[in-house]
Length: 262
Image (tube, rainbow, N blue to C red):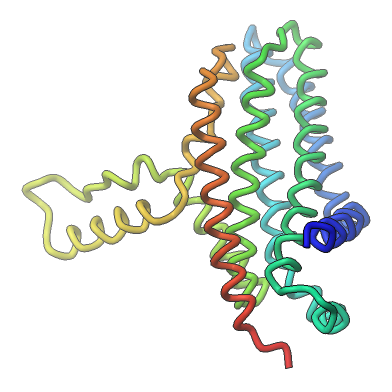
């Protein structure tokens, strides 16, 4: 069972590395980090802060974009190339196929995030900054967030088209990033609220409670000001990410199992 999953994961990793769009986005992100170095060098006594702030933003943004693209195309490409018809007759469960695909993409994203964090770590000293443990903590939490987004994309790709899956995944990401604010949203002043505004507020709060809370993975202020996170915070955020991933993979497996490939 484990061997079959790992075999699919290795094959997915090789395919992802060969993907031209993946390589293009990756090199573009690295180029943007280099551009950040040039821009921060022109700032007045804010070089280190700008480098860390913009650098982490770029790493997070491009990593999420790559995760969305690869995740929503996971099942679609197998159907388009008809390779899934050669896999399904073999003694392998559909959930094993899905988990193997996810692990392969997660491994690919781990390499990509690690390389970009390492590049950022190499650029920071060039503007007079110091590299602390907070940089790698931020990188780990970026990767945890990417794993969640990848799992969410996998859920939508199990039953929908890549375009719609991409829109839904980006929507979940945006809401999740602002979940801490949206969960307490109240539209208008108390004296101006109507049934309509209260209904909209309640709907938004309900959605914010359902989607994964991704705001806890945005630790840019800690990185900018060199404040290490506590081990408890990192462990709790990692455990929560693992829970989200398991739940999403379980849901994706159920949807994928019910999908008709004929």
